[in-house]
Image (tube, rainbow, N blue to C red; front, side, top):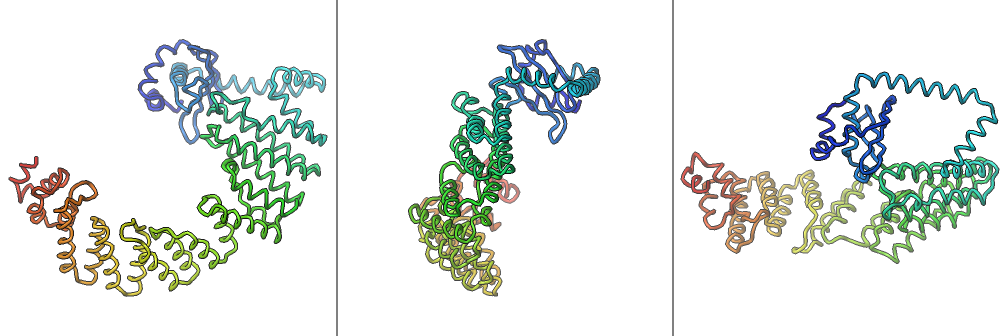
Amino acid sequence: MGFGEDELRTLAGARSFERRLGYLDAVSGLEAGEGSVTAVVHGTDVYEVELTLGGGKRISGWCDCPYGQEGNFCKHCVAVGLTVLRRAKTIPHQRTAARARATALEAWLTALTRNELLTLVRERIAEDSRLRRRLELRAAAARSDIGTVQDRILTLIDPRPLTRYGHIEYADAPGYAQQVAEAAAALRALTADGRAAEAVSLAEEAIRVMGERYAEIDDSDGVVGQAAAAMAQIHLEACRVARPDPDRLAEWLVSHILGDSNDATDLDPLDYADTLGPSGLARLRQLAAEAQQREPTGWAERYLMEHLVKAEGNIDALIALYAQDLNPSGATHVRIAEALESAGRADEALAWAERGLRDCPAHTHIDGRVVDYVCARYAAAGRPADVLGVRRDRFHIERSLAAYQRLRSAALATERWEPERVAALAALREDAHRERGGRYGGPVLIDALIDDGDVDTAWREAAGLADDRQQEQLADLSRQTHPAEALDVY
């Protein structure tokens, strides 16, 4: 079968696995297909269960009980899994029977007359309102009935009929995704039928509605996101055929991207470059710049502007954009340095990184990347003394074990570790007596001495200063050389 009781226990957890006992005799209607098994479990309600076998995961389960709809492998799934194991000998026969039934059904449908098929479809439409709405959409698209198409598309992409407890639950997301896919297919048919302008308008409305409602959908598997991306692709295809006004298209793109509804589709305005043309792209850039001026700290505004500037390949414009909001930690400075270096302007890159070191106030956390960037460029240029100077300055500001370790590496490269060590330990000793704790509570002085391998000095300094962690570390390191002190600690 590809799974056993141990795997069912792992998937469900001990509690759900043990609770399956009351449901083993409640499983009915077991049907085995090629890669899945379906059944009904009778509990406080009647629940439908489907187990999927094989593939990337050996087994996965879905149940429409409340716990199962949250994506959990519930007790009902366990009961069906155990029932499958109980009936392992009959499963191959059931699969053979399922294939035979499918073949017989196909043969029967093929043999029906046109009128008989129509009667069958009409009966199914009368029983299933969702199927009726989908077929109405296909019929309206086929005859280019724009009014009906619009009405049916808006009905399909409206998630509210599927909403329970204020949102679409995990189990209902695939059904909603299928409705969105049906709507997208109808719009593609409109475009192919010469009604691309109407398809553009309807796709924009669909994208707006989905964007506004996407936060209310449990799209853990991304199926709705995939359907929404397909809708966005239909919009792009229709625009390429319809060639809408470039300025209006640019305005719609900016409005959508900067709004709260782009999570579902994640539109990239540059995908529309050939449709926008030079005038539309210029309008797009203008609107993005105006939006950033209005909201200089807005994440979406900044991202859009940066995306457009990068696409232009204008490195100076990109640097100017970054420079408008320099982070005091130096993070922006190192982004500028990396952009300049990639453009072959290494001297300017280093100058910006050095400026980041100067601009960062002593009391502010500095981004370690800017320090590492400067030191790496100094080392590559054969300037080890300058590397040591940067590491020394950073150590006296940070006073951390990591800063001490970096200082040691730089000083060893210049054969100046002994005098640097004396000065660094003196600073840490002063901190320790001022109760300036290290990262884990104890003084950095003790961590630095341990890191140097100077256990004897660490023991002398530890009295009244080291915390429990440091004392235990010292005891572990020196049970042979300091047995009495180690015993006291233990």
